[in-house]
Image (cartoon, rainbow, N blue to C red):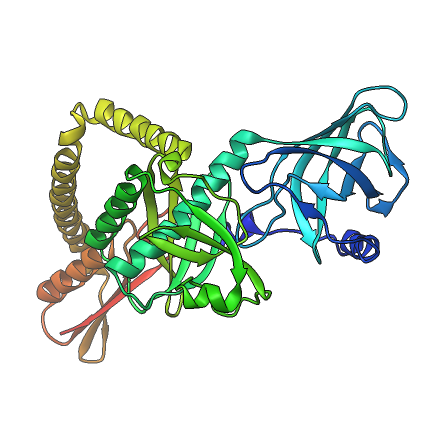
Length: 403
């Protein structure tokens, strides 16, 4: 529930309606971000300022900028939109800077969302788009790694595995797939090793556009349920993977650097999920865990290779201590209960004892009740109740014993 809440996205329907209306009158944006192109000049076709169509925007305004062409990748196919800058002279002579925080698509029109940091931006202005290269490289590494992951799953786990969804951002990747069982730890190790082998083999990617029938005949993998045009983009890692994909990718698998699986889990009936990191994110992931290992080593006075053994020993010590504590509490409960025997009352030919005994757990209370039965003899009923933790008024234990 916490993860779902953190991942929730608020959608401004008013803004979306405004974007729909503006985009409906424009031609599709020409995307120039393939072939590793990360900058180009464009003309502002339309502009929304603070959620409304406008002719211009100035310092501090939240904007959605619609261009005739763009180097920015628009979110799609599981890959997040690019970040970067739009720069220009500005109509008033001041240097223009617009910080682009994300790019989406609306029926082929790319919508660049951000904020005017300096200067004035107007419809008809020519601006220069500059993609954040570091973010793009990380997204490309994660996207190509996702293709390698699917190929490895098919090879190691099941050739029939199919994609059920994915997310590629600047920090990590997530891949959902159809599988009736959990992927075994040994299989995950094999998958990880296989992908890193493909990375070190430095496969050059071949990217081509072709007719969809030709692509399928060549063996390209398509996502089930996805709609494709008559001409599709095929991303081929020769001998490893061939998929229909409109995302951006590395030019060579060696650019990924390294691949590391973070987790494997079930997200729905018959759907498994693998989360992983690739490229520079692997170093950040390993550094974070190295800090934890060092802290544990300092706390346990142990070398990294001795931590597991040390924790196991402490767990055994804790179990022994808990057993001894439980036995001591039971003995204490019996000792406390001995004084309660005088509170027994005669009910006809039977003896009845009802008493309160706090600070004793269920096992201890049961032992006390049985001890009182032995002490009082046959034809006795003992009912004991109490708070196992006097500070917790919401939990009560009752025990009844009959002799």
